[in-house]
Length: 147
Image (cartoon, rainbow, N blue to C red):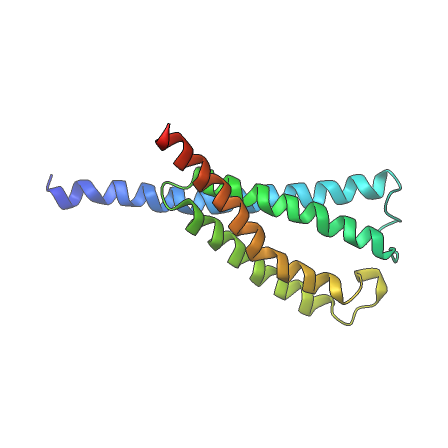
């Protein structure tokens, strides 16, 4: 086996780990967001599905989506084989794209889909959440290497 042939499996594993890290963060965010939405509706904190909500409840949703985005980005950075912040930012870019699609899909659907500022807020938090999650992991790694 040549040296080049032995590098291919390692490179393939790194690519799979990179993709897996981003997918794991995305799955965590989706599970947390939907899970919390279901709990909020089931407990009566939120009204029944597709009923208009007060502004304060939309702000609550943005709050936990922010925390979920940071947690998912941290997980992505934690699982990344290298460059944790870059992987977290890739997840943030995917979130930005998905939030854009969601905003376009719901823009003129009516109050049951939320106020117009809500999908814009989701767009605005995607990259900052990714940056925070990735930076938390980078700082953790730096502390571990310094100590």
